[in-house]
Length: 488
Image 1: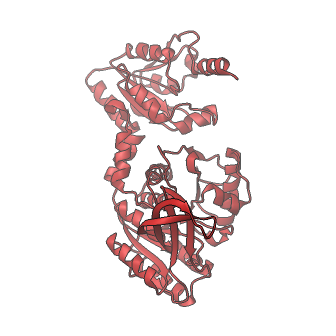
Image 2 (image 1 turned 180 degrees about the vertical axis):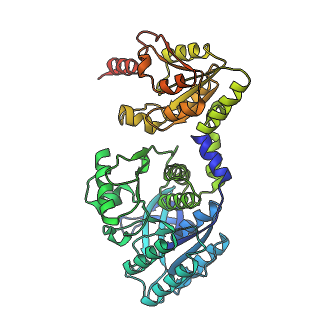
Image 3 (image 1 turned 30 degrees about the horizontal axis):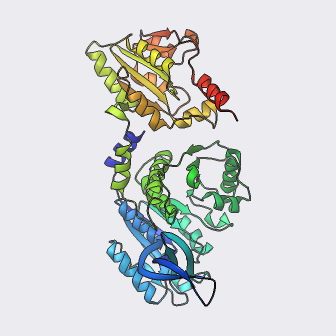
């Protein structure tokens, strides 16, 4: 999976993306605290630095730029010094500020974070949440109409600060529908009727609870919340970000959904993570990625972002480096097409191809013996490995115990395994049809008539072999033994 995503990103083409929403100036006051004020029971911050960064929709645009795309930013600022700071930051990022309109009725939104010893002590917000002036809203819509045809898609960054009144959103989504553009919304607030007409909504857990009225404590609750949001928004897909738990994708009402575990190695600061997800998810979708692949890349980007202090624009290069570092061992991973072509080449050389498949969760001696025996039945052994999502469908939410990347690496280190193909379907039927193995191997706990792919293999002259299993060796037995020995 990691290698496939890396290759997809490496060959992905970029274009233009329209970003519209609340433009925010993030200010960071950092220093040290050594004493308490004699005037009140409050710490005294000795300010050592002051820095400014793009926030809100402007940070989304910066992330779009870092992913190699050309962002068009549409938003509003006040007629003040902070507006000048935002214009300067945008120019430094290579983002044109021309479509960020001035609204003299409102100040530029600024969030000031007071930080001591790498810990945020306080946040000061300068803002006016009322809706934009009608004149400013008309200018923003005019800019959207002028650029909608040239962009590949639209990212809506709503921070609930008034830049996106419902009439503006309604016309924006109508523009997207008329011109066939995908719209991705990072939402805010409880009333999601304002997003009706959007393609994809990406609330976090807290936002999903507030908008749906469903208290989320289980996977079933996530599904129930998503169903409520589908009903309200009529969106094509709902992606709920779950912080340290990862992300869940819901492609239609009533669907079970797909959960992707978090990728973060270390969480330093979650500020701006939602902006990174919206930007990465949007650009991947606009570039032709499937929703699942786009979310997987966004999941990796979010993991990189939360490892930095303050908002951080995650680049395509950084995502690829992360994927490159975690590719499975020995370059054995192949997709269906690659495995099929490789197997065909082997047969053309007169070599016999063997295939077996499984979850291989907590690889044990029984697995190794089966693989070694399978390898002796031909010249090359290809292993089909169930993805995490596939295992969850088969065995429940408590499995797998090991992430698919770990299982890929462990299998890749076994010499008798020559190639590994990850599959997300419940069965490897499509993979077997692509590879056309000479020998299909399963354990002796199966009956030949029950082996998935038997009919396909036997139809072209291949055969099924059942390998005797090592008695008492199974992942379930290992789990039971661990629980029994360490209970209490």
